[in-house]
Image 1 (spheres, helix red, strand yellow):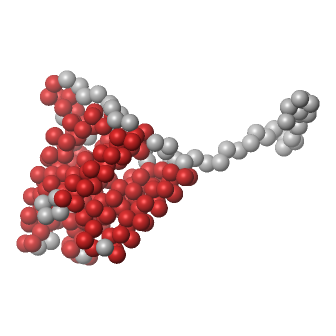
Image 2 (cartoon, helix red, strand yellow):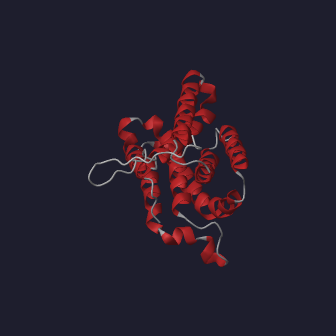
Image 3 (cartoon, helix red, strand yellow):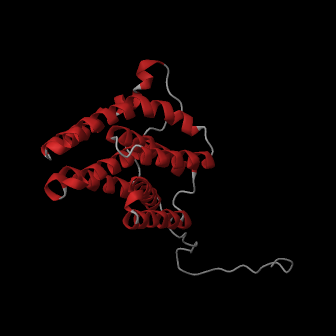
Length: 236
């Protein structure tokens, strides 16, 4: 299971490195970094899993885990880092492990197929409801991480249904990311909703940039000589 979005993959790796190094840099930012990692990792998981229908039986229920079990190893490292960060972050480690277990064993097998049946407007509504749920789960880290995981899966399906790689869609995602970050800076009370929204919009923008279409080159003959054809009189 490998994604095809190179720029987003690089950003995912950098984010993972920053989260692992956060106890030495800024321990207070560790929960926000973990939440961002849940969104990006779930986005990458839905992108790599090409199936839209779940296979029958228990093996089909966990087939996305069986395809790449090594993908879960960084979460154990992040939980260890949370324990090392200090006694105040010990509960964060338990929340990470419980949330990733919920995401992989329950949330993803259930919603991945349901989201695939929704139109794009329905997906946008689902994303809005999940952002509201993130705000309501402000005090519960486990529930908040689980909502972030579902948000990443929903965002990937939304991106797969949309005009990927177009300049307008890329600028729209970047503009929404900047607007959400401004709201988070100017209105701290809204950070629980604005920050996940900014992370998701930035993830969508990086996904668009990864498949940005280049301007097509017009056909030219090998010798560099252009040939022009006269238009018929009746055509403009």
